[in-house]
Image (spheres, rainbow, N blue to C red):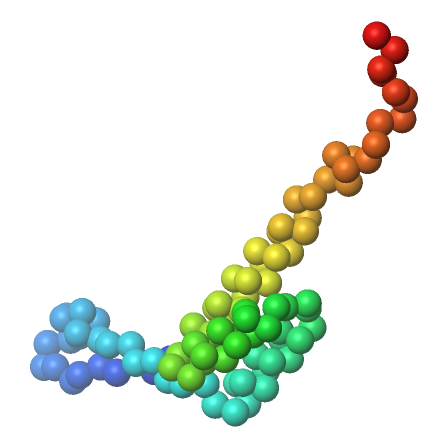
Length: 96
């Protein structure tokens, strides 16, 4: 989203892709607003929110990746819980 690609102009373009650098850009105010809206749609601990904002101060794209990774892991964590495992047995087998 907010990565720039800086390439030096060489006479030989064969090695130009090896010398390309990626520069990280801090998130803009609009990016922070989008990130806040994305995290406020779900129940997110304040520590995760503040960590995403701290990452956005240095690299906006990494902050969005961090938020996406947290949201997907939280979604899969809730999906793994099987309600049948937490249910009490229907019959009592303590007759022995």
